[in-house]
Each structure stands twice: as C-alpha cells, then as structure tokens.
Amino acid sequence: MNHATEVFQPLQADDPPVVAGYRLAARLGAGGMGRVYLSHTQGGRPVAIKVVRPELADDPAFRRRFRREVEAARRVRGAYTAELIDADADGTPPWAATLYVPGPSLTEAVAHRGPLPVPAVLWLVAGVAEALQAVHAAGIVHRDLKPSNVLLAADGPRVIDFGISLAADFTSHTATGAAVGTPHFMAPEQAAAGEVTAATDVFALGQTAAFAALGRPLYGEGSAVGVLYRIVHDEPDLSLLPEQLRPLFARCLAAAPGDRAGLAEIVEWCRQRLGADADAGAGPAVWRDVMGPEVTVPAPVPTPTRVLPQPLVVTQPRSLPAGPGERRARRRRTALVTGAALVAGALVLTGLAGMVADAGNRFGDWVAGAPSTPGPDKDGRSSGSGAGAPSSTPASGGRTPEASEPSKSASPQVESQATLILTPENSLSFRKPFMRDDRKGDIRLDCKDVGCAVESDTSVFLQLFGKSGATLDECRLMLASADRHRWTLAAAAAGSEICVKHSNGDIALLVLQTKSTALPELASLMVDLTIWRDAA
Image (cartoon, rainbow, N blue to C red; front, top):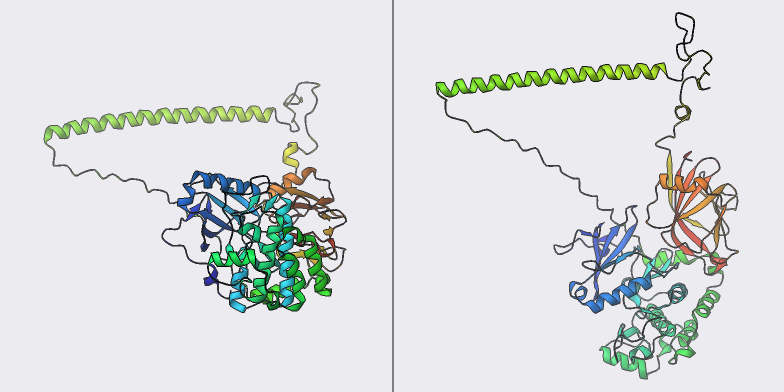
C-alpha cells in the first residue's frame, strides 16, 4: 500500500457527510454489510465508521443480530484487536465505530508484495492467536477470520470485523442448515453447518496463515461449492508450504476440532521458532518491511463555521408628494413623537441619576463597613466601628482571603510526544528525553501481576473511563485526591486514558495506543504523552 489514494477514497455524492456526530473524512471501503469511512473522535483519534446498508437496516431480524454483535464486541479487549469504541444498533442507519488501524489488510499486503517470508508468518500467527484469545475470553467465536479481516499495523496484526461473530451464550445456528462465513476460510464443521466452537477459529487461523505463506488460498480457487467440498472431504496439501511451518499447519488444520492446537500452544510454538528475535522484540522491523511506506492519515474534517443571518433591512417605498392637509398632519405626528421621546429621555435620565446616586450610597455604605483600618473622625474616634468594637482588618491588609490566593495560570506550557513504547526494561520521564533506557524514569511498567501495571515513585495515577479526549481541567479535578502510585492495567485497553500528577506540579495524560501484556516477558505499552507544566 504505497499511496494514500489507494487507502483513502474521496466521499461520493451518496455518502453522508456526518454519521451520529462523526464528520467523515474519506471512504475506506465497502462490503456486504455496508460502507466503512474514516472519521475522528473529538480528541482527534482516527476511527473507522461502519455504516450498515439501508436494505439490511430495514430488516428487524438483522437489527436484532447487529445489536447482539455490538454488545458482544464491546467485551473484546486485546493488543491485537481493533477495539469497538462507539455504536448505535438502533440508529438510522445502524453504525459502529472502531479504532482505525493505519495499515493494509493481509489481502492487500500479499497482493502488493507476494507471499510473506517465514519470520513474518510466525509473527502473524502469534499475533492473530493472541487476538483470538481476547475474543474467546469475551465469550465470542469470530466465525469469519480471513486475510481481509487481518490488518497489518506497524507493531503487529489486528483482527477486525466481528460482523458475523457468534456470542457463545446464543444459539450456534442462524438458521437450520445455514453456514455463515467466507467459504475459502471455513472449517469443515462450519461448512457442514455443524457446531461452531473456538476450534473453528483455529482452523481459519491456519488457512489465513497459509494464504500469507502461499499468496493464495490453501484449498484453491473456484466456486464456493467446490471449495467447501474440498474443505470437508479432502486433506490439505501441506507440501506447498515452507517445511518449517508444516507441523504448525498440520495441528491447526486437523479435520476433527478436538485434534487442533490450542491458542496458547500456538503462541508458544511460534515464539520458540522466532528464538532471540522474540526476546528482542524484532516484530516491528518485520512489519515495516511487509507494510511498505506508511501513508498519512487525512486530518479531521473541521466543523463548519456557523454563519449568522444578516439583519433584514426594510426599505420604505417612495411615496407620492403629499398635499397641504397631509403635510400638516405629518408635522403634528412628528411633534407628538418628538415630545414623547423627550419625556421618555427625561425619565430615563432621571432613573439613571437615581441609580447612580443609589449606587454611590451603596458604595459609601460598603466603604464604611469595609474590612479596612478605620481612620479617626474629628472626635478622635474610629469612624468604622463603635467604641470597643473589634477590628475586622485581615492580615492581608484589606483584601479578602479569596483575593489573597494566587490565581492558576490559564495557559500552562504544554509538551507532547506520540508513540512512546514502554516496556519492563525502560521508563518514561517528565523531562526530556521522555524515553529512558533504564528504570530510573518517573513512570515504569511492571508485570509482576496479571495484566501488568504502571508505577512511579514521584507521581500518582488515575484512569479515566467514558468518553475520550480528556482535558487538563478534567485531569486536574480527578487527580485532586489521587494517592495511588501504582495503577493496574487489567481494565485498560487501546484508547484508555490515564491522568498522572508529578510531585513537582506537572500533570500528564497517557493515552494507550496498544497494550500487549499476555506474555509478561514481551509486555509493552505504546502510548501518547501530553504534559502540562506546573498545572497542579
């Protein structure tokens, strides 16, 4: 994917400019379910907006299913998934928004560069397997894993589109004898409309990885019926695959679901074959080679400036010359109007004078009772209080306590840095350089506990929940009573925001781009950092 024009297509005449408040910047593509657009959150984060086709939106059964899938997708949290951040199954039309992944699909990458090398396939399988672990942990079977539903980002693959996924607590059939999925990447039991389980996704993972290694579907091209027949009745020809990968594919593509490898086993198998590269975190270099040059994401569409209507100017029509009688009547009306205006003006001036006098009296009364040091009157007594009255003079010399407090600067200095990678070996600092190669910075990642945590000796943390795009005022308010120097990341996911307050008065906002904590020894966080200096 070498050109932005291949990724971001201009909006067409039948595309809406706005969907539920999201201003659309470009068209990303279209599929059987609807169209996908690029938009941005209020804080500027790019998102992909999927808008359901009108003919589907008019089907009550589809709306019920779409609502079920949205509720299921909200439960998915993982480093290698594109998180659902917003949706409305009852909208007109229904829509869903996920975090935008800046990278081509596996289908596009293979079409541009051909089959992937063995190390890239291993990284791909490990990442997608970890994504499926997150999906299955939420009680969901994806059911439509395929190359076009795997996006290749700079730090690894992302599994997307749970459009026909199956929540485990619902029936496993949409209709009697109906098979749901993409024929070339179905499992045998799925093709035969049998029971669909997590092992079904493992079979699709094997087929997707085989496509990456071969550059084409493992079970060949042709009609859907022919492909499905071969999947159900034929053994896959593994001789076409790289020899070192065949044992993995044999376990993933076993005909019986119970004979297939588990996801944790797959991740460990790939990690062992990657060896030192896995421990050194060499994945990003592999993905840069596969992805090619990065494209620039279009900027958010600005909100149109509101144009206020101009005042209406009424032009009086020109009249014909008036006769003597009409001219005298006009002079009488003019005199009456002028007299009324003079009377009204006098009344207004009188009222203003009264208001000024009253304000003067009030000001004099306030001065007489003001908390200032009273001066002596001509009799030598204090003019501000009676004899023996206690003095009300504050230590500030006449100012109220509120006036004596210093005001907070309205515009503290702001510094920001995007795409910082925090691991258990390095740390983040509030001072430049923000990244440190040692553990002596202000913010560290610790993975002793499940899910890992951020910790600090100098700062306190508080995670925000709800809408994205936290402001300084929100962080300042929430941090006022914060006292936790360690914050677990179990409930954090891509897009999560954590406010941080340093003991020196600086306030920072960490925005998680990706979170990978399934394997503690390979754990990492990719974050955006914003610091407001002396803002506490």
